[in-house]
Image 1 (cartoon, rainbow, N blue to C red):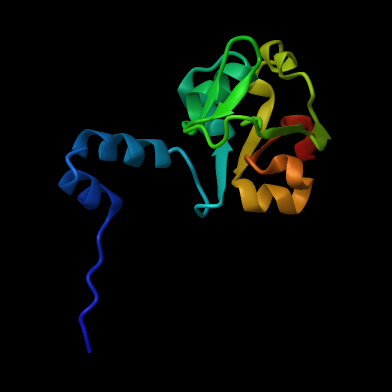
Image 2: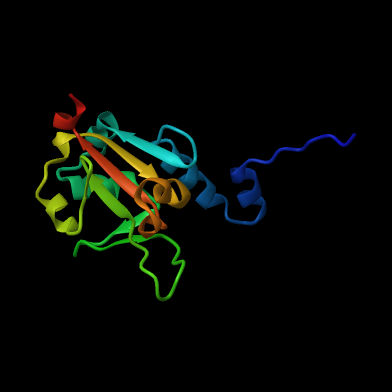
Length: 143
């Protein structure tokens, strides 16, 4: 029987010569709760980030998406030249088509942000959610 040898992501990355990135991955994961397919950002984390708007909170707390100032969202690491890399963004159960409304919404109104990876997102929102889904729950939807 062979002994099992476990490696952490940080150890593998330091062997590959990208040790600086491993620390960034650890600190980015520290803001999330949950397993690797579903990530949760709480109101406490949003408050600690210093975000003023929901768009700002998304930029500061979700590291694997790029949130552009024009309302465009992309998954880091392009997956296709032709297919869109935008995740589905859902606010209190309503799928948003215009993300710029999040620029006018205060971050203090957010209770929870849940980030789903592609396979989990397609379970809830169909094939259009192949790049994932960001579900935003406000404090009024909490009750």
